Image 1 (tube, rainbow, N blue to C red):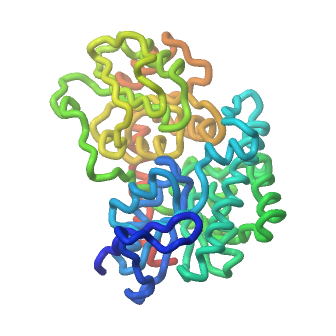
Image 2 (tube, rainbow, N blue to C red):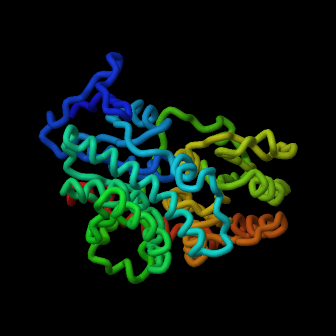
Amino acid sequence: MVPPKPWNRDRQGADPGTDVPTVQFGESGGMKIAFRGHPYFGHLYPLMPLAYAARDAGHEVIFPTTGPFSNRIAALGFCTVEAGILLDEARRRRFGRPLAPTADDDNMVWNVVGEYFAEAAVAVATDLRQLQPELAIDLVVHEDTDLGAAAAAAAAGIASVSVAITRSLDPHVVEAFRGPVLRELQVRFGTVPRPDDLVLDSYPPSLQRPAFRTDPRRVPLRPVPWAEPSLPLPPWVGTRDRKLIFVTLGTVAGTIETMQLIIDGLAPLDADILVATGANDPAFLAALPDNVHVETFVHQANLVPHIDLMVHHGGGGTTSSAWVHGVPQLVLPDGADRFLNAEAVAASGGGIELRTPTPELIATSARLLLDDPAYRRSAGAVRDELAALPEPAAVLSTL
């Protein structure tokens, strides 16, 4: 199949501009598959290996998305249509201002997150319903928190499956998060996701919630870290002579204060430290020693095979990337599912969880993880467990 040319439509449904060619769907004889995730690295990138597998298998792939990811995805040769809103916009619509929920009460945090995810769900469901008569999508593959895409599929009577990259939530947490989303979808959209849709589960089976391991909806899927091919690693990564520690708090979560705390703990170690600041301005960091290197963004899928330790916030994609490569982890969770991932890392024996970090605790934990081979052996066992799961192309063929 010749990869389709990028296609972008504006939000009002006007015809594409003359400088962007349109694509006639249905030419290949395969399915028309929409891949939908919230337009952020940690939500959208886990879908990319499946999207490539679908395109390689002759299916027509489209990404309903918005914001900067419309151009990023189109540049890879995929079709895009404008749909949904950014979560920052969803927060503003719901609360009148951006909101950073605290981690004082687990249910409260999940409920607050559910409130603004509900706003995002209604927006994307409405957009997809308007687009469906023209696109005639056969299957929706969506990130598991993007319930609006699932509701749109249910309303159109087409199949949908979710991709889960984090541990299955306990029932009380499911209600706290999904409750506001489902209520808003029912009231404002008129349809909610089907309860029996398949879930593609890329979490290590030994660390998954036991009740979900036997769920008939569950389909195991090997996680495949993915990065855009155009961003090289810093040249010094391949020429260093010390161990390498990678620090990330994600591209959205995390504060400059936490990042500084981590740097203060790690800097005295005999190791090179690469810090990806994400949304934080590195200018607010204190003067850095020679062994600390700062980048605003690093494609961690390319970097992780080179590192000896990952220090992070517990995001699903970040945790999975370290597991895939058998890298020990020091996790400082800061909310939502990140606590679940931190607990799983500690339970695996391949890492340490710190909920109340200090520079001293960070330094002590990092030394343990670097020097004690038991941590790397345990991380390697999780790596081997994930490698035994079905790859994306094999899973796609069952859909």
